[in-house]
Image (cartoon, rainbow, N blue to C red; front, side, top):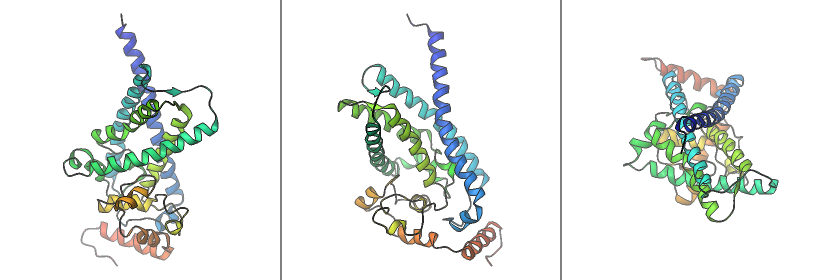
Length: 283
């Protein structure tokens, strides 16, 4: 017979641990980049993608939503662990080689990029958008804190990748290593935050180089927030190129941002301040 009070205590303890882990990743990644943007303010201003600024209301909504997302992610983690307990998911926590960790990490990143692209496009369908993805798009000007700003429904679809992926790999007969999943989770949040920085992190020429042009930049995702139904990819530009959903001015906008001089940045800042004051025209 199950001792319900004990079972509840165990569940509550593990739930808190998982929520703390997910929240910790979010706070570390978003917090570090926020500090960096403040420390290197002059550079950040020069590389800012939009003239518009996020408001206090935006930051409050994003952080509050991210707390809820952490809880949803934690519940999905429990689903994965439950699938492991009943033998449907294979997870290796013992000895493994670094080569195994490397190829499993790479496989997970590539698979997640494909999953995210199609899930993301589906959420933009007119029958799903308002209920699922509109909340995230309230952040027209993304910030590092936008990364986890999801509705509950979107948080579920985002989080389901891991149990689905692990069910698939287990069905194919191999166990994912705990370290590969751990590295993937940290990679995911850092890349997510970089995509929402609002400041172009990558150097000039990145999109024109055949060795780096397939790697998503901050401008790539920022254009998705500012203009809508383009640039659905998360880590790479592959799917947007293959499916014809890349923003037609993506490379042009990237070049414009990365070529901006300090003088142009100061002029853009004055224009943004003027626009923020009702009845004031830009100088």
